[in-house]
Image (cartoon, rainbow, N blue to C red; front, side, top):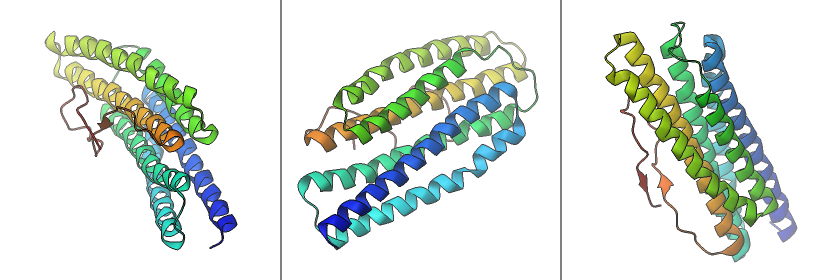
Length: 240
């Protein structure tokens, strides 16, 4: 493969990754919208689209590996290929978390919502913006925007903490079992949105390393997105 062919394939892989990013951004929006409107059919479609995201991840990773095998890239190009490989993993996990929200929508079903959903949709819009900005900073190699994404993570953590206190308060009030279960399910939704923000932060930090070659202090989110039957709580992080 010529250098020109290498860069042409690299650009094609980047375009495919951005397409994948747009799809998971749509999944976030739809998952929370269908929760708010209790659209169970829509939530099921979000789950069905997860296979598309998974296959895109596999294809991108295979193309990255083939690109490295066919031509030994220069240091800066190698960082770009590795960044795409890792960012794609974060994007896929964002999609998983959106699907977890869709699963919770099906679990809540048509039972009346215990509170108007205002905070959760607002939190979803903020996390969706983080995902969009993290991919934009990749395209533009924009370090300032990458840092802005990192800084946006703390307000998301604060929103999650506030929702945790509110929803656990409902559980501890000892109201009906149905109300308590729904409060826990909504707490899971907030938890998954907080994890999406963590993945967006990962992407921004990978962009920083790709551009500068310098690592930034960060803690990646856990390897697997937990399912809706896990106990909720603050995200535990581990370094990769």
